[in-house]
Image (cartoon, rainbow, N blue to C red; front, side, top):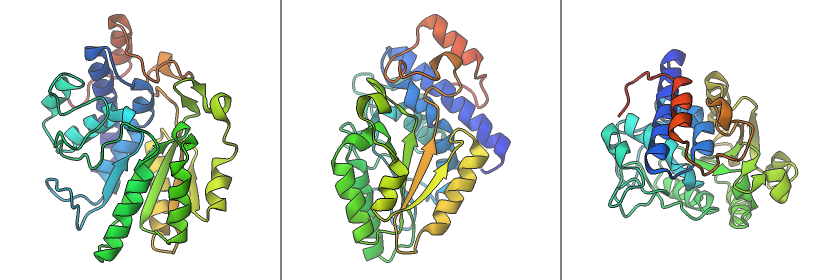
Length: 281
């Protein structure tokens, strides 16, 4: 699937899923999930080379690792609607004995999930290990990772970033969700990191910026450019400028919806802004 209208419809349905999942249990992280809906849609519906079914070895296909695991609603929605498990299972999000825990876990055996990512700052390290394994196996497919911008305040990331360039892990595309928000406020207020681009470049990565990180065509163009830069001796970083809460007017331009569920009235308002396209679960 690569038609822009199809991808747009898919994204709108994913937004509905996110809102309904979080509302149903009055728990979860809608803000960052909504902000990354276009990116996940492009990744799974257009960009990644995926084999039918799911196996943890992932040989002969592209892999994706979610590091900022609290945006699990968008991950689960896109996985389900990409055929990894029944869409109806989204109704079990964060419930007892569900495979759809608040943060993705591997022991639940949920297809599509390759690492547990409740603790922040670890996904890049895992993705690098997977990328090196692909090189050892002479598997030319790409490893994708997503990390949050606030998450980069965790030190292990910088060990990983240093390691990846030193070891020429050039089959890796690490995307940073630059929405400028984290749970306690703006990233600049909590711990200003200065220029993330300059930091990655100083660590000898190739860096691409997608200024319109909620624009499907811009994401396709940027990620296609990133893919073209793989295999040239350097890891690739994509700086994805997104809007937290994108697609729901009252959730945008604030960190307030990082980890808060909408009320019944707010849900109705949000869903009216995102009419069903593929059918609700």
